[in-house]
Image (cartoon, rainbow, N blue to C red; front, side):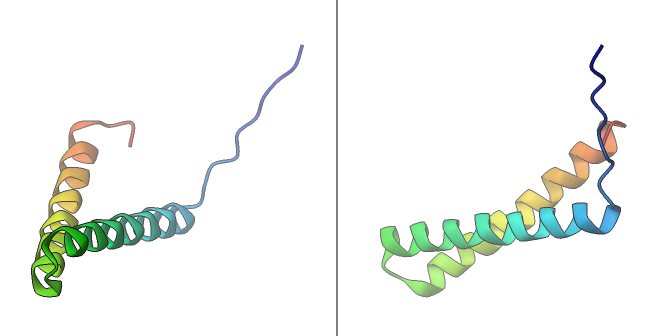
Length: 68
């Protein structure tokens, strides 16, 4: 019988992965918004709203789901 073992990720590694993914996703949003609006300030505002919204969403998800 084959047994699969999973190593638990360290809390620091998990946080670093989440943060780097969020930065990449926000940067993508800013670039797309810049292409569409042709305005850097509008693109940064859209990216900022997306970043904060994603953080709030993550916080709510983690507080409602005990598995996180």
